[in-house]
Image (cartoon, rainbow, N blue to C red):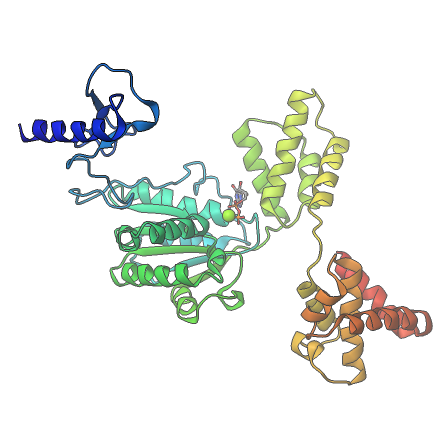
Length: 421
Ligand code: ADP
Ligand code: MG
């Protein structure tokens, strides 16, 4: 009854303010429909009059309580959380080889006894396309299989960061933290992505400590070893080093063959051995590319009705090798040049005027100009904070010396070879 009286008052005010065309619509969201995508809405028009378009007034009622955050559902003790695991990435199809044996075995050990080994956290690191994501999922899948009651969550660092930013915006930071503290096995992919993100690192530090103290398992992946990670807080880096850091290396020839054969077998495709060998010989440092060549071959064969031939393999491999020949980084050039002259990068960058060091520095500048798209200024600033004129001078000196000094010419040739590999 009270509601009806209120309704009358509100309707009356509206008509007074907006004229006879005004219309009051109740928009009633039914209780207990939080999780549904389209909450039931009951609209109660004040009369049969035509609605006045811009004046739709919605009166919120008390029971229309919105679920403020996506992380906590009130009233539920144990929340069911989707693991976000890909069942196709499992141990059965993660081919073992010398390059991954340590990481794979550690992963297995962790899967058998999550939180119960000294591999906590387990940090899997290695270059792109070497199986970090695959192995991480495999560990999660295995744990889910063995311990269905454990709450396992796989998440990329990128997504984790985004969720954290959203939680700060919507004032639900604590709920975000609570959510992650409920997880039994947390798998975080590509933690190098957290570099430079102080806020996310801070929140992750707290979550990590809580999980670790409570015997929960944390598994991390990164494209670098902890010692080489940049812009990650020291206290977090020290946590990363607590357990085991296991490297995934580029697979050797036999492992590459096994990976290719394994994939062909699973896809039910037969391919002449010499072609498999050709691919394995030419794609060396990235399993994703190895698979990519195979997928292109199979596509060509089935869509264009082409036979599996060495020529086809060569065409496809060439495309892969060319398209992935990346621009060198100035960092890399400095490393190669310093190593060639048996000095460290800091020496190469130093202010010293010792002749052999000056020459090494000038060569690093010269190759950076020749092999990257960076400007003279940018090269200078990255090689010991020099200005663009110094770099220009270095390039001219190298050109001159190459013509006049045999030994120096040899340096340039050797380094060209090393950098072009
Ligand atoms: P990363 O995360 O290190 O960049 P991924 O885990 O995404 O690499 O691996 C790239 C591809 O190579 C995936 O399709 C994965 O299944 C495959 N792969 C990597 N290592 C292996 C392996 N040892 N056995 C079978 N497939 C592998
Ligand atoms: Mg990955």
